Length: 307
Length: 275
Image (cartoon, rainbow over all chains, first blue to last red):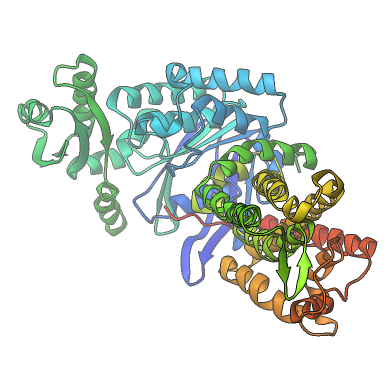
């Protein structure tokens, strides 16, 4: 099977700092999760496979072609970057339409493609609002809309679920899986194993600029269960939420911040499932944002490298 | 290698995307205020002329409205405002997108990177022309009637001046776009070029002045300046210039060459965004 991304002794360094170190990897078609803690080299790898950076050494091919200085390849590639940056004064529809127009389609076609993509990420009602007025979750979704609007063969998503509320997070995971089932190849990066595992079993583990493991990495699941997982939840009624959490023995600790509660859990799977149910019923008020700090994986990776 | 859409059509789509952002930016508001300066000055001159005198003397020579307008065009617009606009917008064409972290959206579309620069350059040209035009026209209507000048008779010179301003914006914008893509501190380098290097070498005879935009723009100035004064002598030195056609040729060459080099730079450069 032809790999969608093939790296051959790929290295990237920034002056004295090594971002990626002699990586050789073939990413098969389908959904692949790129998993690694903060500073592992995920961002460098994502930038190299989207042609934003030029390899210092080695080669990288995407869909069988070198990606650096090959803009034509972006007819077949869609990219949803991590950074939360937009033309804030534009509406969601205007922004996605303007970006799709850069693919060379007519104005009417671009508007129709943008509208379809916005509908796919369930943002149609807010399509006419200025992006500056969007919530974090809506901003994530409009970024995904611009990446899928031209119906690319390969979708590259950098931390796409960051900041989404539990319900939208679940919907987005379902959406990504649907795209995978529809024959698209997807590379999705995250520092949260739970997120990646809910989308695919095919994982690339990256740490300190090297690929540690690739394929179906089941043993990571056991490791993650042994280490507490921290979740930051921004909600209207944090005290009521905390009361619900404390009724379950997987919650190890709780800490309150302004409009948010930080939870440590020993069983992230069970915790996220319960959180999504709570958000869906609305029993404890609105839950606006769920994030997980980068250091969750660090302990697991340190353990993995030592063992 | 996959094919991408034609350069000009891609550049025009980037232009569409960028013009609105540029027009309503804080930079445009600030420079819009700056462009109000000549209008305030012209208003003051007109009020003074209406209330107290029928004309102005500059170093003993009578200066009519058309002369005052010509001096304002040269000294305020061509020598100051146009380079300022060129420096502030030209050096920021790509830098703004990098700073706002929106460059990724443009560089991951099927268009050559140079078309992003080209589209944004066209947007700069349209944006700055839209900013300068009302200011110059207002100054024209306020100053030309001073001392009994005729608005209708001087109208062709207004058209020429507007053309010269657009040529100046195009040339300075391209030069500073190159500065913006090549240097780490483009704003400082641009200001030094516009207000250090250019005025300095223009004062001295020799070939160095050919390495300025101002030298070629002088040839396009059509206004007569007041004579028999230190200012007029200085202006005479300034006016050691090539012919109009030669100047237009060199300005076009400077614009095309610097834009091409800036495009090359954008194609090859890696833009690492802070997370």
